[in-house]
Image (cartoon, rainbow, N blue to C red; front, top):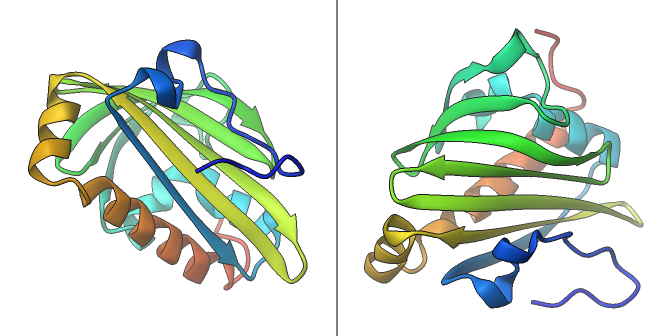
Amino acid sequence: MTSPASEPAIHWPEHFHPANVPVHVVNEMFIPASAEHIWAWLVREPLWPTWYANSKVDWIRDKSRDLALGVQFHWKTFGVSITSRVQEFVPCERIAWDGTGMGAHVYHAWLIIPKAGGCLVRTEESQHGWGARLMHLLQPHRMYDGHDLWLKSLSIQSQTGLPPEL
């Protein structure tokens, strides 16, 4: 999917550009909530398991309560343990992290694009590695469906207001 010229685009590291990977997935959803509320739920990573069923948080380096540029975290998603580091961070606009897990090296980016009555939230993930290729071959819609659930869950949470403090 390409973004219209008037909308922001993902800042891909060359190695993870969609043209250079065997697996790439794009999801987007209009969320009727402010960018501030969406952002707050997205970066409050210790709370992900309370609202996104496909995640389990093991630890965040430096015990940060929220993700920030350079923060490393270890979590489980799609049944795979992943160590990630935030590579891009522009509050209320964009966040991206890379990750390494069994047979996969990934780059997952999010854009929050304000619109009338809420925001368009786009998430894209590019993957390299034998594990990524194998999972995509066996279950080609799994990552799309998982990210769709993430967006739907993010929408529900964002409409409740800000997340609780940790």
